[in-house]
Amino acid sequence: MPIDRPTDLDAALASLSDVPSAHLLAGGTDAMVEITFDQRRPEHIVALRRIPELRGYRVDDDELTFGAMLTYTQVERELASTAPGLAMAARTVGSPQIRNTGTIGGNLGTASPAGDTLPWLLALDARVELRSVRGSRELSLADFVTGPKRTAREPDELITAVRVPRVEGPQHVAKLGPRNAMVISVAMAAVIVDTTNRRVRAAFGSVGPRPIRASDAEQQVSDAIDWDALTCPDDAIVHFADACAEASQPISDHRSTADYRRHAVAVLAARSLRRCLAA
Ligand SMILES: Cc1cc2nc3c(=O)[nH]c(=O)nc-3n(C[C@H](O)[C@H](O)[C@H](O)COP(=O)(O)OP(=O)(O)OC[C@H]3O[C@@H](n4cnc5c(N)ncnc54)[C@H](O)[C@@H]3O)c2cc1C
Image (cartoon, rainbow, N blue to C red; front, side, top):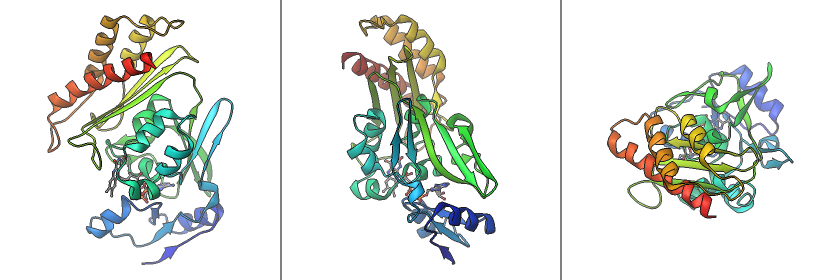
């Protein structure tokens, strides 16, 4: 099978325009599993590793931009104070080998309901930047992920970056699975106490066909928080947890029952919010 190894973004976009059915290869931690198990037989591959424009990240006053080829290891090592929730999520991904090569762009490209970066990105209203030879566009993450492992990406488009607003305040990400490492989550929570905008942000993974935002729960608890003292009455936290569970749309499968997932959302939501407020 032909493999293009472009060394800049324009060359990659040209390759993809010539062969829109080509499979994009970032770190390969999802793609190579599918190819090895014969679940995917790409006729053409465009490898993204040599493209400098997709690497790294940018920290601006009001915005963080993560390049599609940013690895989990880089997030853990270099962004722990700037994007603490994303670093917490990155730390839970796979093994050191997976974190060294797996990328944010690949997590978005796969769009698994269990993708560990997606709840944090969704909670922050992330915008996904897509480029093709036709131009560029941005989609909210909510519009980008259209279903389980389905996205709004056109075949000739590349994810180049994902952006979030820079907000102050504590963040917590919690992942639940049957063991502590190398695990696909049964439920995942990202809670951000955004003191810049005086609002709580909360999103969940593995409890719906795509990451779930708990907007009503966010609104209710944001109204209950004392934003100067950063405290919240306990009954409001319990109410928040119940409203998050209510927003989830879990299914029963070989990893968990829907009831257990719903219960887990409530537990992770309350725990994450309490940790934020105690920080
Ligand atoms: C042992 C193991 C453990 C894992 N553990 C976890 C875990 O704990 N949590 C978790 O979330 N995931 C986990 N994964 C899944 C995987 O590591 C992640 O989804 C990772 O982020 C994929 O990134 P990648 O760079 O390897 O993507 P690839 O495998 O190269 O690509 C994944 C998909 O995204 C597409 N793609 C990649 N880059 C782009 C781009 N720039 N534009 C458009 N499409 C693109 C590809 O075409 C492909 O469809 C695990 C995988 C393995 C094998």
